[in-house]
Length: 382
Image (cartoon, rainbow, N blue to C red; front, side, top):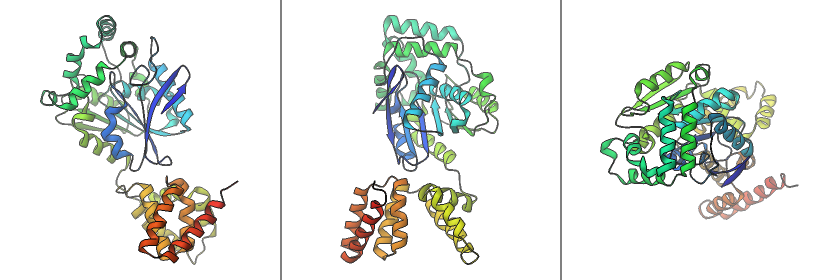
């Protein structure tokens, strides 16, 4: 899809349940949102993944330079406003990581966490970027393609079809978009701004990255209080494609840390699925008679099962609706039908699972479930 933000149309891909925690992923110089394909596929099971093409890259509008970190930050802010996203998890690689740091410094309240991959607080020396910009404007991206690819991947990975795809991605980048973004790197220095960040942060670096080596990642890690560092063996500057499983695992472990407080995790998921108003009402109606029972289902059902990352929330919602309909638990069925608006389940999905109920649990059960579903959905009709 395309979204107009001020002077450009941003091409953005979205995957995963719309009500799930949003994760925005920013790509590197000379690539586009597709370098996140492997990570997005897994993250979308339990997150709303948003992948824009940066200004001057991919299918997003390419405007004449100069570009700056402030311009990229404003583009991202405009995108979030257009999508109605108040707080996000933000990940970025290389220039995407620099933009992420700049956004975090300017709008810390908009971030739940940061994932910074093969990036730095600055990319000196400035003249190397201005010279590169002049070269590509004069001779095209083919003039730097071999040198760039040799830094993006390790020699052992250079002959793969994936590397050929990266090269094609680079060569299809608009020349002005690449050059203007390179000039933005020449003037960007977030050394002081990044050191002020108080946001949960994961720093990842390929062990063989010549552009932002381990020492650079360690400096970034040291600058952000409380951050964690992950070094990926056998990867260069774009480990997203060279070591996709390792990067995905590191991101998932950071975004979904092991549960230690099942009551708190359960309350968070219960609120997200059933809605804050329902949970507050249930709390007000709790008495000594059912207090332990309410604590039990919050801890065990919501914290012990619904909070598990193995199934996306939409799937758990559909499974629950199917079981409640099959077992004839009408009150719970109503509850989860109402909650379906928060889990990405559509009325078309519900029709399909209730047809499944008719075959495997019996027509009377499905008939009752369809009746209840019509009553529930009528509640929301104007």
